[in-house]
Amino acid sequence: MSNSYLRLGVNIDHVATIRNARGGPRPDPLRAALLAIDAGADGITAHLREDRRHITDADMARLKERISKPLNFEMAATEQMLDIALGVRPHAVCIVPEKRTERTTEGGLDVIRAHDYLLAYVDQLSRSNIRVSLFVEPTLEVIDAARSVKAKVVELHTGAWCHAVEMNNKQQAEQEFERIKKAAAYGAKVGLEIHAGHGLDYETARRVSTLPQISELNIGHFLIGEAVFVGLSETIRTMRAAMNEGRVQAS
Figure 1 (cartoon, rainbow, N blue to C red):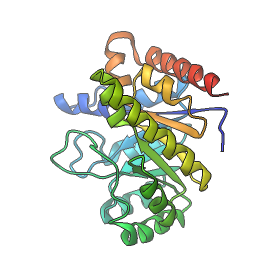
Figure 2 (tube, one colour):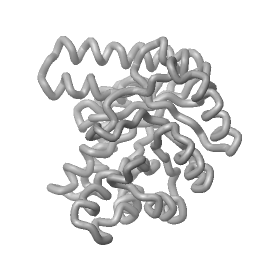
Figure 3 (cartoon, helix red, strand yellow):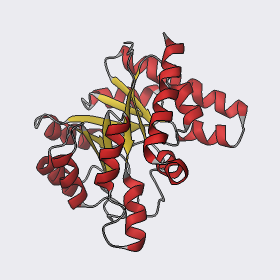
Figure 4 (cartoon, one colour):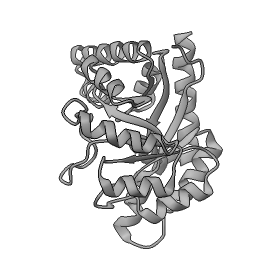
């Protein structure tokens, strides 16, 4: 399964992180989402965490009401989040692991251990015509488990690879990239839509874009950080160009 066009989902969580550090309404995540779409984002991703440390319930409702592109609702597989998702009815839900003590999502979902619970959970979302993605480690066993719980999409966790690149650990970086490459090929072969995300910057996004099975990248923290210096629209246009360069190499 090869995808000529690679979609960019922009995660606006950390605009809300800055807002919440001070309190009050600014900077507004909705404004960031609208700017991102105008600059070329194909969708908006937002993670409503249990502790509401950045995105809030009101943010999710406003995003669903106001943006013109698909809304990807990242969330833990809890009953509360299921109720909220069924109320908001986003285009897509990406189920992620979540711990109160973590700074950000630290790894992929344990689909194998939570198989039976996720099977019922995914079914409830799917019956409401919400596309379900699972944020997973790039291993074949987990890909099989994701398919078994009837998710349509997996988002491959690229964090370990990106960290190895940042640390200039070339051997580990190549090993991690090979894992992603094999998982993407295998997942597409068994009929899953393949996304990727976590820790991506211009360089790593360009390289992962060369994998033809991947149809979407979700990128947030790096874009918001770079936006402090050059503006959000510029960072998204530069990211879009990097992804396009990688995709050209894949063809």
